[in-house]
Image 1: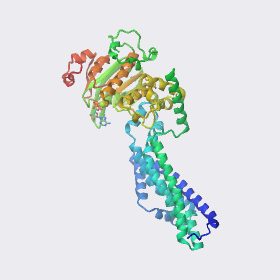
Image 2 (image 1 turned 45 degrees about the vertical axis):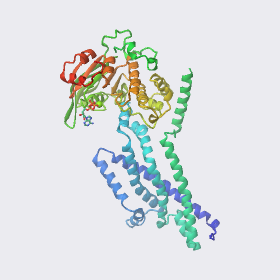
Image 3 (image 1 turned 30 degrees about the vertical axis):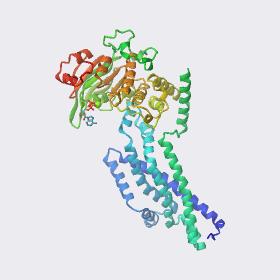
Image 4 (image 1 turned 180 degrees about the horizontal axis):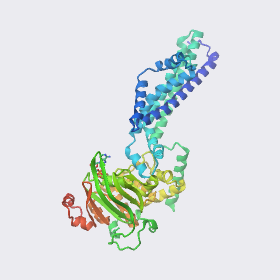
Amino acid sequence: MFEVPWSDYSDPLWQGLLHTVEYTVLGFCGAAVLGLVLALMRLSHLRMVRFPSALYTEVFKNIPLLAIIFITYFGLTSVGLKMGALEAGALSLVVFYAAYLSEIFRSALAGVHDGQRESAHALGMSRLGTLTHVIFPQALRLALPGTNTFLVDLLKSTSLLVTISAAELMTQAQLITSDTFRALEVYVVIAAVYFALCYPLSQALLWLERKVRAGAALTPGRRRRLRKARVMLASETTS
Amino acid sequence: MKLTKAGSGPEKPADAVPADPVPATAADPAGRPSTEPPEGPAVVRISGLSKSFDGRLVLDDIDLEIRAGEIVSLLGSSGGGKSTLLRCVNLLERPDRATIELAGEPVFSGDRAVYRDLAELRQRVGMVFQRFHLFPHLTAIENVVLAQMKAAKVSEDQALETAVQLLRRVGVDHRALAFPEQMSGGEQQRVAIARALALRPAVLLFDEPTSALDPESTREVLRVIRGLAEYGMTMAIVTHEVPFAREISDRIAFLDGGRIIEQGTPEEVLDDPQEARTQAFLASYEGSGR
Ligand SMILES: Nc1ncnc2c1ncn2[C@@H]1O[C@H](COP(=O)(O)OP(=O)(O)OP(=O)(O)O)[C@@H](O)[C@H]1O
Ligand SMILES: [Mg+2]
């Protein structure tokens, strides 16, 4: 079955892999930031702030990613806004996935009990301090499962960028196929590469989810604090 | 503080009671006769406080003063405005009109807040909630450390030191590295008390601190509050534990329909209530120490 001289194609494959990872990282980071901004806007008490965010979310949740890709890459060109495949591809992923992530973030933020904000305020913590040290860490716990699902989904969706020849894995597969005429072998191999990316990623994210849920100290500052606490508690009880 | 040693129960009160002397800030003149009400300066002075929700008057022209070292219990039927009154003191709730002074400093006047620094003000007013509201993503000791570091800007070492001392003082130092969900209600509430104490508040406000607890946990928490009383801590306590209120309070205020309809020493209010509403309320607490 294996008749494609894969060693000749290691370079394009490697390039494709790097590009897939690049789109995933850019797309996810952008979507997470935009999604968070949208989620915070949704929780504002001002209608003027809430409304645009809700509108955005509803619009982009209800149109296909492929349509967004075509609009940004082909459509905007026709009105003089020329973008390369990288910019258009990453932008499409950002605007599309931000809509979904904003929903997840919003419900996670709303899921943190109101008493948490109150007790932090009663202790004299600022609004920003309360958000960063009390609300966000708890919202993170609630948001991780859904966020992780969408991260893997986003990675797989980068394959749609084949339609704008974005040089990622799927595009490379298409090129290799047109070179060798061995579609089955090539696409099975490429599918295996996607699996090899996605499976460890989702397992790692599950591990992270469990760690965060168990309250594990993931930052160096917190580790140090807990280490000091252990030492103090031990020495105080013996004294 | 009218508590006597005998009141603190046979179980080792040393758990909750610090050996060190009362600090000057607690303003509890040592050796003050236990029957006399404290004559210290007012820590909290509220006058003419009114508050409404959606046009419905919930607090109606309240006057209340809490002096240094004094323990005031607020009793009253559900919906009488007890929680709202406490929440107005640290401005978690904004009064419609009021004059509020904390340790002589005006923080609210007319219909405007006039504090210099809200965060600093709130550090001076500790609050303990019925449902604890510990931070579930942090261990007990981190719960006590967080506001010290982020609000009071205390160094990490100092904050940890204070936390260990306070956790020991409320008797949960052996649970210092546990998460709230791993602790009993009584342990959680004691951590919450330590968390509030860590900021060295001038006054502690308790909103039904034992209402969500089983009898065993209730005893633990009440023992800690007694310990604080012996220490000379200034406190306002909303409670339904009438015998406890009688035992610990210098003064009891009875709130009904948004007004303080009666206040005085525990004996005056509990044994000889003048108002029909107070009588009815106390009658519903049969066998509760009357
Ligand atoms: N945020 C709010 N919005 C609207 N109404 C409120 C709010 N908080 C309290 N109230 C109303 O104000 C009144 C007083 O409430 P509060 O919680 O202060 O009473 P309480 O004496 O503490 O009662 P309980 O013993 O049940 O705790 C109640 O009628 C309550 O429904
Ligand atoms: Mg209440």
